[in-house]
Length: 283
Image 1 (spheres, rainbow, N blue to C red):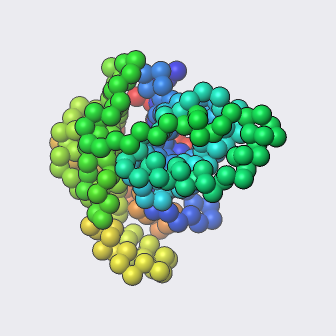
Image 2: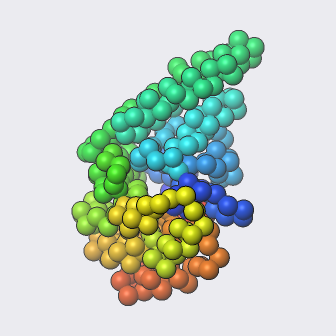
Image 3: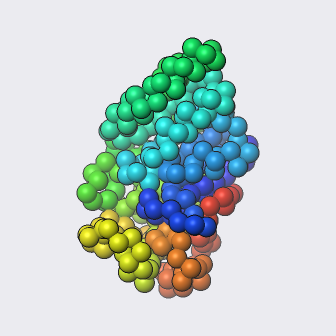
């Protein structure tokens, strides 16, 4: 199994538009494990398109409970179950993840019960273990170590950057965050830093297209990172490759790769990847 990061959903925010990318989700293969990270709309199809069987689902990590990161968590687990999942899956998420999962099970109670009775399937609830985590060590098993750092994503307080170390490689994910200097230490020397990024020139277009977010501008600037600041942080951390993901905007034809690269040119001179749905990054 190659050390590889699949960017399954690359846009910031919950809205989807014709021909545009999906919200945030990733598949990380490292230290012999397959790890789904965040579960925005489209994650199930995205995982399948990488060639992975849903019956191989192993570990899931959720960075925070905004809908564009969890809306398809239940759908992923349920579809894996109907595909033939028969081994336990562990889901790591912040406080509230267990309540989210219980709510999903309640909403699909009729379907789950009838499939158990009619098709002889194992109990879905018994296959899924929810582990709620906070800042600090999260997971250690068979050479894979995962640690979490609380980041600045108001008004959400339980939002965590994640560091995955295994097989001599390190991958760090910023999660959703305003510019947060402590991330540089957390990501120091990483093979890959995946950091969210926003272009200020695109913010007004997003607000105009959305229409029903009276305080959306204030939220975006208080809770997200400008692309140039992501580049500064990557330079300070001396990471090997910077991946811009959770792009704001990601589905505006007025902006393309050149705009992101121009924003980072003064502050980052290393390998740079601009996320697109389905893109695979080897490291």
